[in-house]
Amino acid sequence: MSKLSQMYGYWKDSIKTSMKRYDENLEKSLKHLQDFYSRILKDYIIDWRKYFESQPFRHNLRQKIEGFFGKNEINFVAIDGTCIKDEGSNFITFFAGAYGARGKIIIKHEGEKIKYERWDFARDVTMMAHLPVYPYEIEFVANSHELNQMQFYSDKDVQEILNLHTSLMKLAEVYLAYHVVSSSTVDMPQIILLDLAPSTLLRVPYVNYKNTNYLGYKYLNDTIKLSDVIIALSHPYNKELGVPSKKKYRSYALLLSKLDEICSQNQKTFFTYKELAEICQLSIDDIKEIIKFLNATGVVEDDKVAGIKLLVNLSQRWNYLVSFFDYICNQIFVRKNPTALEFSNLSEKSNIKKLISHDDISFLISIGIRALIEKCWEKNVFLIGIVKDSKSRYFCRNFLNVLSSQNMLQIVEENFKTNNLQIAMSDRLVFENCAALSTELCAPWSSVEFDSAFTTLFVDRNNNITGVKGHIVSDDRIFAKSIAQFYLQRLKNQCKMGHAIFVERLLHPALDKQFLDVELVNNSKLGRISPFIHIDKNVINWGQAMNIYFLDVLTRNHFPEVIGYPEPLHKADRGAKTLLRFAKGIIQSSQQLYRKDPLNMTFRKFRDSLKFDDEE
Image 1 (tube, rainbow, N blue to C red):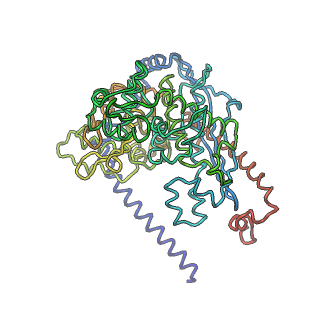
Image 2 (image 1 turned 90 degrees about the vertical axis):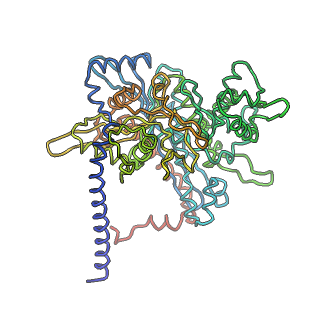
Image 3 (image 1 turned 135 degrees about the horizontal axis):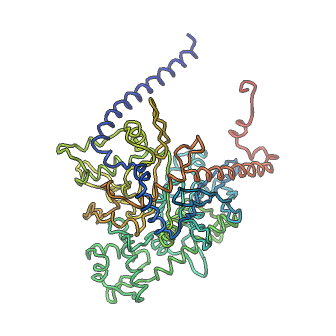
């Protein structure tokens, strides 16, 4: 046997061993899953097909929809983003953009009809810009975490971690969503579909809010201050939903929301610790801790004689920040002004201009997603996020485990052990296999909804609820998550299905207040957390019913490559890919100018562009 044959044999044995181990683990997990489904999971799965086939239920659902939106023709827009990074020897070219597919759902007694509309190019929000990133500028573009990594990496590794284009793509998607929902025209959408989880964008800027280059940025005869960043991160506000909540992490948001409400009524600017404690229903010690932070960031001034003085007009500063976000994004995406991605000189002696960084984009996203949420609340717009191919375990590992630790699971058995909840599968695989194991389920079906804050809630070894790093809990009472499947066809000996997808929707006071009353935890480490919890599946969750109904109508299963996936998002994806194809052509065309100088092409790129006879 030759050395080459021996090497191939080793590879084959390695692959076969790995596949055997995978099959054995999967077989064990499936046996566990059968027991897990029959004892627990079936009580948290809703078969929506049975509801939708009921005429009285459909009549009530149509009434709920018309009562919420005020009409039976529901406009929608599906938004998807695209991006690319092209690396040269002397600079990196970034492209990012977003595309929207528009249409309407016409609801009638005899059924539903979908009508798509052309996207007006006057509303184009794609972005293309050459960002020349030279070696000496790398440290200005990277965020603090990337800077810590760079000391251990080569130049190639440094370029790889600068995924600025993905951040710009998210910003483009958020801006397009905000742009269409802010429209005053009659075709303003009542449903916005995003190809991402909006709740994750709320967690983007938590760490590096002091590092944004927009601090000191001049706009409308004023400048962005650190206090503005804190005010932005305290949003969104919704009194009816109790947002911000009384959780410990970022508790300053609750205080600022209460102060904003009071100051808008009577222009009061001085407060005592006792007054603030009564307003927020927190202890004096908690208020002192919050005031210490707000005093350091310039939001309030702690005067021991006069009291606590509010230094800024909260509502005015928030409106200023939203206007700033709209202006910057308009320059980047609509006017396509490349100078909008640059900052002024770092010093009078330097001719180096600083480029927009991850922290700067995160700051813009943090304003945009919060402004979008508040606009959706104001105009009764359904904001829906769809995530495909996720490997997360938030439902089984987080949600069910947390309920079990609080004795809130609906389990008849007295000797049930929490380790029975440990399934060695992602949530997607769990639900897809449940559809195959249970002959009762029909599409569409889904899990019950749970608060997006459960993604940061865990159960420790002492059976206590804890957050990330012990105390960090994401914003609760804003988004609800679920896992759903929209294509399932049973034949005699097989089961055809599409992937289970993760669905996230914005909560609305008119639909979801009844599921916000359960106190999950109340302690000194996490504070009081009463997230959205829908435990009893027999109690109709009309918000989820409307959401699943819309997605079921929009999932037409016309395209075999995206069976069980909302069709408008697929159309948006195809539109975004078309933009990307055009962008690639322009980028490649622009590089013709530099071909006269071979040094502008890297060794790797020049070598990979060559073809040899043995490769054909």
